[in-house]
Image (cartoon, rainbow, N blue to C red; front, top):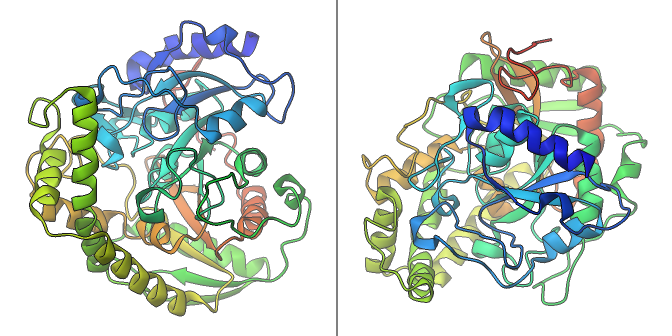
Length: 457
């Protein structure tokens, strides 16, 4: 209970400035959790879309879902409680998790603790900002195109997107959005990522398949040697958005470090074209529109400009009027997986930027509040900006963003390490090596509980 009280005090201190947490539960100090476990008594926050807690509000950042309370506990939060995590509140998200900028009509703009004029990323931006600002040491997120790794990169955190099937989405969201979306966490250390993998990994009845299971607990990987790896390095852009020179320098510096560690490093070209991802997303909008209509009927509401933000309304209308079929989504994703798989098969891991830029200012064209773009233009813009992340949601491979660098102004730069399908163990080991070689634990954002100015080391 003391840790929960401290989290509430930290929330009261910094949340008015960053707007990361929608609510701290009134009963936070008495929320049930196991009497032991890897995270005994640790305060935990839930992103306001995705994995559910029965009876708790989950409004998905949308006026369409105001007052919605699911009646089912997700397997994710059952595991969280069993591990001793105490879920004390919920965090902001972009509407329906559809943008990498955490801005919504319902809950406002979430600011980046490193620079309040810039985005915390998204769609798990509220969780990222809350962890970076010291409200909680770990928080729930989910990732369907970069929504854990993007805010991790922009807020200076560790953000892992596990392999498809590693974390069950049950009982109601198994293999969500054509297998692209996974639930996990954002935190500050590789050790906590390894422990979280041990907590949340594992199949449940009803899952569509069972992924290869680990040989040992992931925390044990922290004490095992990495071995010599073949590393493919992305030094060029994979989409229309240019790579910031400082981000490119961070990639090159990390590649040099891996070489010095004894790994074999080779440059790779883009293994796909971003138009492939755009086509897949547009093809999937028909299914999304149908799901939204079902949800609107259940909520007793109408889909219009009063319930959906400008871009999401355009995406809904595009899907409703399109002839998209599930089969076409599956075929586009199959071709994309095959093409990428062939291109990168020779490598144990890939090294890429997480994002081509540091955190962007609020109100960009990537926000679903901004009405500037059409549905097609918004999808193309997303594919261009999330050029290094979304592709691995499609292939199902695990990938982690590590806060290995900063730009000249002290803004975090995330570096992404991508593993083979089902091989989170290698990611844990190499991430440990990089954290030890270039520690980030003493870096602090400008806004952090108990502090008012960044300490950059």
